[in-house]
Image (cartoon, rainbow over all chains, first blue to last red; front, top):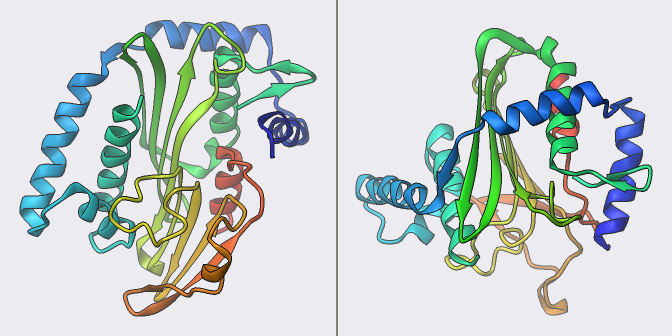
Length: 97
Length: 176
């Protein structure tokens, strides 16, 4: 399915939910966007790498990939599994960009 | 996100829609048990908006919503969601619902859901996985079965690639 087709479906759902884009809503959204702090990705990657390393040490796991796979199968408690997923996938996304 | 009435949603529309969806579902959220964090992430001239929401619901769900959206001068990229994770845990019921975008396949390339957006539903000892994709496995592998903690995984390819909206996720957890 092409991106445009996906968005055609998205449009139908939005319409069914009666979600409207208003000037007032856009102004509020713009204000929120402008007030959002800008963070360099490199610092976030370094921080996330440290956290994943600490999980590897804690659970005696050799690689981040194995850690991710086991988190995906909920071997750890929910909060830890989610944390691993977010941080691991963030690093992967930013490595390939 | 995308376009409406023939016009592409831009990033500001996207933020506005996201906020409306959360606002419309405020009735679900326990007062004072919610956190909203926004960051703009910048790398090599590419910028993304990261939106993270954490809250508890009146029906006992611990919810996390995390999204990343491209910021760009060019449509349709401006406002396009590149990552999502929606999570709902109900500890009392041992129930866990996790939607997320694709993640790495390096460790277990044989699991055919890792490289596509997917949805896990852990209910007691059962795990169902719905994949936002057609079955992309080689024909010989399409009858393969998978296990989770020695229990079978019920795997379904949804045969479309429409990412689920936050609103659909919230609709789903509102009746748990």
